[in-house]
Amino acid sequence: MTKTRKNNSAPENKNISFDFNNMMADAIGEEQGITEAMIQDLSEDIYRVDRELKQKRESGELPFFDLPYQDEVLKEIEDFAGELKSRCDNFVVLGIGGSALGTIALQTALTLPFYNLLSKSKRDGNPRLFVADNIDPDQFKALLDLLDPRLTVCNVISKSGETAETMSQFLIMKEWFNKKLTKEEIKKHFIITTDKKTGNLRKIVEKENYRNFVTPAGVGGRFSVLTPVGLLPAAVVGIDIAQLLAGAGYMDTICKGNNVWENPAYMNGTLHYLADVRKRKNISVMMPYAVALKDVADWYRQLWAESLGKKYSLTGETVRIGPTPVKALGVTDQHSQLQLYLEGPYDKVVTFLTADQYREEVTISDLYPEMDGVGYLGGHTLNELIHAEQRATESALTRNQRLNCTINLSAINPFTVGQLLYMIEVQTAFIGGLYRINPFDQPGVEEGKDYACGIMGRRGYEDKQKEIDRMTSTNLKYVI
Image (cartoon, rainbow, N blue to C red; front, top):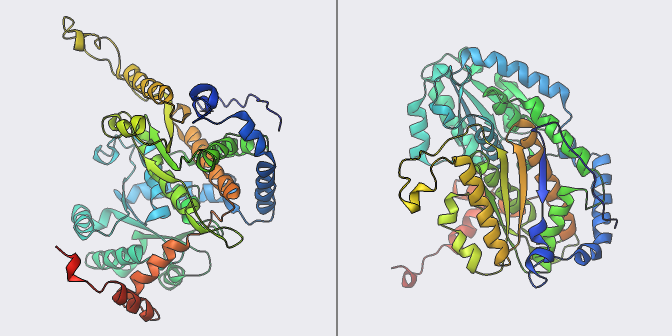
């Protein structure tokens, strides 16, 4: 494996970089760190997984790879989002898991802080965005009480049209609309994002003629942020989705090479794999040092948990594999989790998400120069302080021989965020290949859904209800 690096510089303020110095034995020692020899020893596996992914991409088995290149869908969404602004103050997404987390991540990263609290003029005339990703009855009822149905448009997202949480919300919301609007008016207040041909939502679309967008075949929910699932809500709140896809496409060009020293997705996947199987570090902490990126960590958590947490290998062996993803936030979690990361078990890899530039620069007032513990802050900026806090945390982890790496964005904009999301998706597919598991299914999730269907009385799931009854017979000895 040739160890070379080339310059893949993007336009100014539109680049990201991956710094893995503190993953290596050079920085933290051979007992905890990864050596170049360990990466070299994995060469055959790296090349094999690269070939497998390329073959599956060429055969159409992994369509998420080609999502940056969907010009027709892009124009359709942009045109519709522009039209929607004139008749909508509230855009509500009904979806859960992969149908919600990508949208939340994009909104947090690429709209102004406290976006929904801003006046419409400060939102450039765009609607507020609410993502109803839970079925807590108090929260959902409070959301309905907050909104005016005449000024609300609802985007229902479910590929199968059988997601119990989403479909329950849809049924409630349709009745809510029925009380205020005519049947013909309601058509303008629902947008359906679902499978092109099959499923209950597709049947509802055909029966009631709702405006609809398609979830591409072969793209699972957790990989769907760059499909209409994530692109439509993003466009509605004014995010430049063309630049988002352009950034993903730019990262695709970088990730097509099989030299791990030039491919950040492959290298990050390789390092996390070696940290787990060779160094027993199976907890992956993502720690953004920008509130704008905090929900990227939440999106990442689902992506890795569902993709990599598997009982069986590709050959059917029981392996029970998978790193545990954890989200943290700098600087907040320096005061809640860092003690564990620094002095607890050597079982974690910390990935920092950082940004060179923030939207604003805030100066710290110089009010108490005579007080040593306060005065030194005066005249500096919060920008300087948050950078200093991240560097300090990184240095403390490194000094204590804790694996850490940094993905840095020159600025937080659609182009860099597109790169970031695409890189993480590729590294997920790649590390799944190293583990020899299928990163694109989720049998454990399906089992839980089946039990819920049994409890709720769905026809054909009676056996699941009986299983639940047997498992939950209560022994009063163990109830206090």
